Length: 97
Length: 503
Image (cartoon, rainbow over the protein chains, first blue to last red):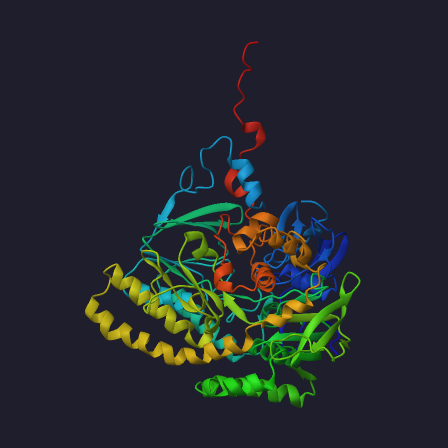
């Protein structure tokens, strides 16, 4: 079994950065898709649906489904379409929109 | 970001028609001879061909780099990686596009397309407009999704998402992954996960061996692709991956996040076999999907004609043999005119560009006859592989039996099967009626991930065919767009205040 979900074999990545997700500190690589960094850190519940408040997460990974939407520095964005930056502040959407 | 409703609220008061991007835009409009919507393999070839005829060409895509989903580039944090054929081919396409004198708008999300033809894109919080007399739609495909109980939990995703995670994110989808559904993508993704060192709990293919065999002669017309597919199967067998044929995913277990799944034997129509017991699979991630269907956002918004064809992957953009749609000077390139796959994408991109160039007199009819007709003539034969794949992976009726009344069908609006059934009972017999009655498909995803499943509920309840159930008209904005894209720095305090009228 893999030690981490990140594929390491023969892959060279950019420099490490840190950001926070719901106040948890997460290590990632500069330019990595936010959702990939969260997934690799085993942070899979990204938001709670507006109507039934059930946990939701990445579903399509290509900007279609809107299931991975989060708040980044106060703006709503899909975690699959945003790349990680040093010091980014990411929080979950919760409840009615 | 705001959805269709939110946008209307802002628009209704001060401006006559703010949803019409043309009416009151402060931005300048950039003009071209041709705009290509989508920079996948078909769109890139279309743009390159059109440019070679002297058309001033713009190509737009919401991804940061060209390539579409098949040739999706590794994410920006990857500085070096082992070379693969897909990567080399994708890089070659990207280089050719970069070297051509073609305007490229990446990271631009198209939110509206208006007749004759104006395209509005959001990039960051900026709105950008382009105009051209001709359009080539090259928006590719979306995955066919069928709900099961528990499928909205984190840890459940489409097969296409799993493919993107491995090839672009360079992250495996889970520690122990269950793959389920139908079609070649199932084996492709399984192989990619295995090769990356991931563990596969099981591969669950709803298609019985007999159906695979029935399509074999057509599949054999593309020996290279068939060999590739057989190679995946052999590789997975050699790695000891447990493969269940004639089985389907029937439930995702978990208390908030996926932590297991139930599968069940299905018959030739994919109904559960009554004497079979569900089998529990130990896994932490479930990736499943039932083949691909054309992505019709743009063409539905423009009001083009569509037609339902199983062999093309379902609802598809209606075109003539030269890829003209029902709309003047709008052409379809690649999978949007029938999901025939990567093998034909480039060819259909070039053909669409030839037709566009001839209709706008950038090339002579003589040259068109000489060069474009052979392209057109080669299509039917080459498409037989794609047709066979579509017939094979097309989700059969029986999957509807796994959708319990409490199962969420519309993720955005959390609408259950029971709620849809009630509306159908009350007279919502078309997809358009069902959308109006329940808001199914009105959420931020625009119905991409619920409407085809909702159609199966109507079909089951009323025993009518997809052609009669129909599809829905598109609505702008096609994707959520941040309100600041339109207001820019204008804030509430900037509203001109009037002195109250004298009492």
